[in-house]
Image (tube, rainbow, N blue to C red; front, top):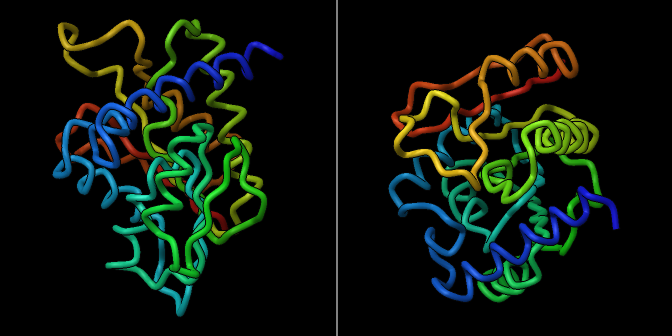
Length: 209
């Protein structure tokens, strides 16, 4: 098992412990509460442009709460949730059984190409991984998002502009300018950085031609 695989296995255990403790709630995917979760989803969903029907890949889907949010506001015809935690996938399948629009798999990589890819919170918990190794992991994962989305992708990260006394060693606080530059140079000329929604994080939207 490579170092990246080992880190993902540790992250999977971390999130499995969370959902076992808190259940299918925002706290169960390590967020503070429903209000901030909805605000976060609103930023990510800005990648979606009007269409008769769109397909979504959700990398790090947790128990599928983003799907519930999207179908209220957007014409999602097919959603794929992907997660490295078996417990998360089991919870998502149980909550969305019978909805033919949603499918969930235990994996780190989507098994299809969709209109849009989304990743919420998956770059926050780095545990013992060093900064350089975690940045390489982020870059590799953004490559996956790029390769499995046709129209664009969106992701968020905790910000390096967070208040120092609130920062935790096991979390990763990314430099928004660094990731904006990476996305501009690597993926698209059309990139937006959203850092104005009053959470200690930012969202990046990458639009394809």
